[in-house]
View (cartoon, one colour):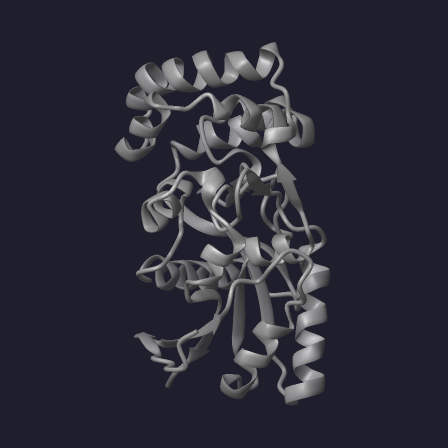
Length: 287
């Protein structure tokens, strides 16, 4: 783990990365609190990615244990690979990278669709990718991580620990990279859950509506303190920009495979632990 902390300036904000080792399943999130504490000041935002929270909660599912049914096979082999990969994807102008990945979906995608169906239902399984915020990256082997439970409660608990240990009052925000869209004053996301002020659990409906939206931000899942939705979305956007700028950012399962030069089922906790991780970012407003 790197001990050198280099702040990034995005006026009128300063961002400070919170570096840690890999947070393992069932492990406490106290390492984030301990490493962030010396840099925190009253009024700061501590923005935490959803995956380490989910892994800490042991919200992991081994997809190799799932036998795909006919619906899952159709959704993988026909709906996602061909209808989205060759027809709907180009029509709706989704990212070329996503189209390319859809066209070469492996057979393992069948089990993934079965997991989506089991935990979140058909509305989410109809999405071509990133269904229900299930994360295939930053987890070992055939595991995937579901969305965290009770994100606002987790955020409040972290904020309380920071206040008790470091005597600082900060706003803790847990975010997901999946998008929040806006049409007029209506903000919505495909994700099963989001913070108050964002209509959630729209699945494929939200995805299709989102193609008409020019505004797209990462989704705040929960906050330790009530904040205006515009502020939460801005903090989420800043944190995501920083995360994506990092060399070792395992944004997708394909990036993870590329980084380790290994198939997904070959990636271990030790391999993940060999990288420097930035599960959280401190955001300060500067004068």
